[in-house]
Image (cartoon, rainbow, N blue to C red):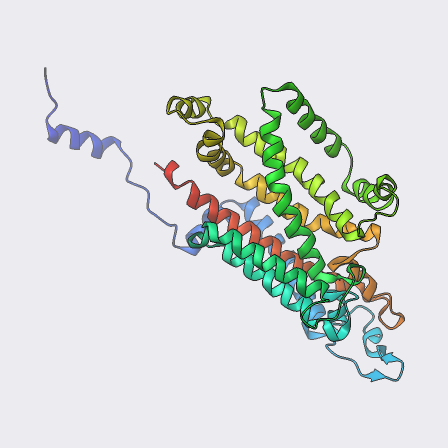
Length: 381
């Protein structure tokens, strides 16, 4: 067996091979030349897009900051908005936010008691932050959630500890949005897991029951379920029995969310190799032990992106409760511009509300990306 001398190999490599590429990842000029100005056509397109973006950015800064009005004087009959109307759209009138932010955030909750939904909002955000920390993923976290939700119920309802009782019909704003979204997801997620497992059951009755539930719920829009919960559901209750409008809306939202989450979870279960379940059976695990310890953790890990995508969509879909007379964040903001003095300044209101929605949705998106990276580190080679 003959071997090639090392000197011949080095000579061949030096004669026929190309030099190794130069790393330019940290050089912004090299990156721009490679991605934005690599040809005449790309250079022209880049310059045109930069000009359009610059013009739009200048117009936005002028409207939102330079020409904007931040406050208006108050008169005997309300705010005087003549200075805002004199702008004729050339600048934003942020004075509406300063005047109506409490109504937008807290709805028709009694003015002197609005510190209570403010604390509720802080409690929800604190729960989200605590739950996002991996170090808190223990059994005690469920106790923290139960205690916090009980405290939120006491704060919102009142009637105890010297707190004024506030009916649910007066709840609104951001606190109501967080209640609908959080309770909806917290109940719909385990419901979706059970329905997804039921669709894969070997028992025909359970399987077809779950299939019927998913197909019926997914076949109608959420607004239809809300109408049925508001109008039709009370007719089915025994005489003299009635459920609060908010509770009926919450049930409709849970049923709707649960059907969509069930299909996402079922996709993760189907993507899992059958060998995982067979190996668990070989180890002597029961069905529920196999599902809880082997199947579900891997299936849920694979469907983190679509799960969070549904969570974000559900958080925004809670605004549909307006159709049954509940004033969530978006509905309260729309009602805020109904006052004659502020009619015509809806853009500023929607920008403010849009920023609030964006903060919550963007936080969910970034957290899901980080969680996906952490839980899939074992797949890196």
